[in-house]
Amino acid sequence: MDSSFLISQSDKRPMYLQIMEQVKQKIAVGDWREGQAIPSIRQLAVDLQVSVITVKRAYLELEREGVIVTHHGRGSTVAAGVDVGATLREAELDQHLDQAARLGTIMGLEADELESRLRNAVDRVTEKEAV
Amino acid sequence: MNSPAIQLQGVVKRYKFFTLDNISLTVPEGEVMGVIGPNGAGKSTTIRILMGLVHQDRGEVRVLGRSMPADQVAAKRDIGFNSEDMRLYGPMTIDWHLRFARSIFPGWDEDYATLLLKRFGLQREQKVKGLSHGQRVKAALLTVLARRPKLMLLDEPTTGLDPVARHEILRELTSAMAEEGRTILFSSHNTKDVEQISDRITFIDRGRIIDSMDKEKYLDRWRRLRLEIPSGVLVPAVRGVVGIKQQGRLAVATSSAFDDELPGAYERAGVRVQRVETMTLEEIFVANVERSREEVDA
Image 1 (cartoon, each protein chain N blue to C red):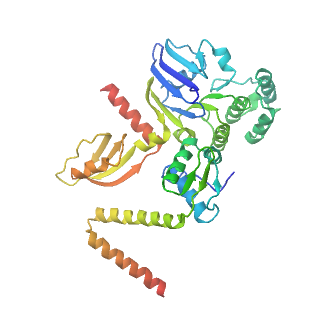
Image 2: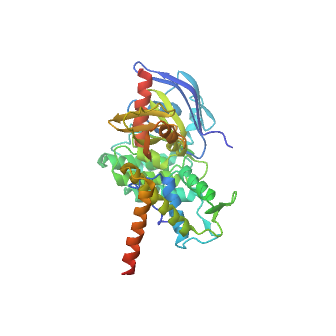
Image 3: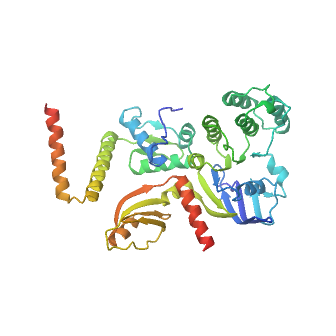
């Protein structure tokens, strides 16, 4: 039983997305290594107390993203040569950028105004780090 | 592929003030089916027909490959059934009930029964009449679970339970699914329970099935779109949108057939899509019942 997995009820995202993220985190921190077998769909469903179909969907999407490899009838393993840490950060950055773009649209900002504000933000952060 | 654990085809049952109307439903072996619907929708009647306790007026019912109600005696060996009005016998102890169940069902697993007693915080010597509601529900479910039946038909197994007891029941139901080839059909008002442990979902309202399908696909089809409508722009009718609520410049659209093209249909008409949100089963449940009643009443 893997007790480090947890479905959060206050997390508004669908359960399969939460499972995907946690699998990626396990790989990113090195708990699960390249080529290592990961729990079967049914086993993870029992551990998380969620339906088999939800875990199946998470595994399918992870396979599509190239994070895991599913061998027919022999379960799934962590794919070779994926930098999940980088992928996770990429996804997080995109999320924040989307959020900024959305807010900008609501405020009626043009794209170049947003761009210059992003540049200012970069300057602020680098200044802080230089101190 | 194995034959389905449950198959209903064109099932009709008429009562004076209620009709179960042309129900068709399939549950493949090895899956959990969650049945949701308002009070009086026909959930219990459907479960009773599956169990052979109520006989349909019309239509075909097959459970574990057997025709119901004709072959109900044989089918019931492999079905575990529980409902609120399945009362345990008040003056007797939990142990008496367990010994009774063990004497009837050859598949009884005494070790598992002992484990469940511990997990549920129950004592063999306790008399049923001294138990709380939650303890009674757990004791009744224990007699079903310890048989390890191929099919469990559970009518509202978590109703009236505190969060801890609910969690315990859900845990045992999902654990049961670790063994391949077991099937569960349960009804609930608690959409969270259904969303969490079901592979498939069936919606019943006023004796009719509104939807019955794969849970992931089902949740994926529904979205809420937050719209901003510039002045002078009219919100177009968009296919797949089942409801729209507008107040001033802001509107919320609900879609039951969402795809990536849908926001574009609004954008092309000059409507700004601020956000696309996923919906919980509870939100879908309410939207769906409202929509279906509008259609019927129209």
